[in-house]
Length: 247
Ligand SMILES: [Zn+2]
Image 1 (cartoon, rainbow, N blue to C red):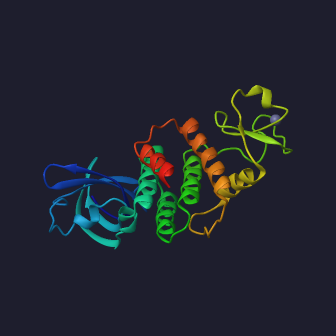
Image 2: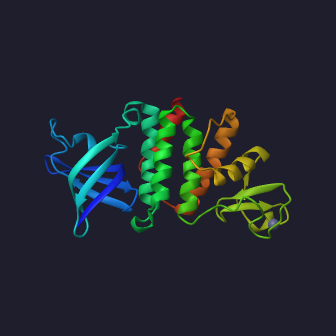
Image 3: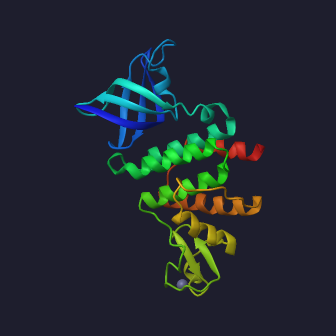
């Protein structure tokens, strides 16, 4: 069967001496593994289609399992995401996040659109930490772990102050605080941002200017939710964290 998709490369693996297998997030066929023959040859016409973060049109045949690329056209090479160290670290983490936390058959147009918009926003120079945090929130929601940040997760109380339970996956009011052993402090601003990030569509995100402290707080809280709720050990995370210490 011939598939014709728009896709974004989220993972590449060398295969044999000359080939590569790419994992694509596609607009209409979920997550797809595609063999790109000759992709490692310098003069290959398909080499550019097998680069991480590339956005293109891919036509491949597939019976079961892996597809084989027949034809492709570059739409955007997204070169900047590979050449700038800070962008590369964040794009790598974002790509791994969508690849690992969402099952193949669950990937739909909405995932593709959010990833595409996130990469575009990164290259437009919007804040990498904020974009990554919003994308993490989208992934939590799309994998069925949408955090409850509108009311107390235990009793439905709307009146603060609240703390965050990364274990329960939501905010906890002071009445219920005794039930949770390890609660994280959440400032009013961070709580508003958690609520805002849930509603945001990455295709419409403008410039969100936050103080370094707020940025650190909100991205730290979402990171805790990701780790506790998804329980995935990300390969790209240490690179990201080490980079964070340098800048
Ligand atoms: Zn409560």
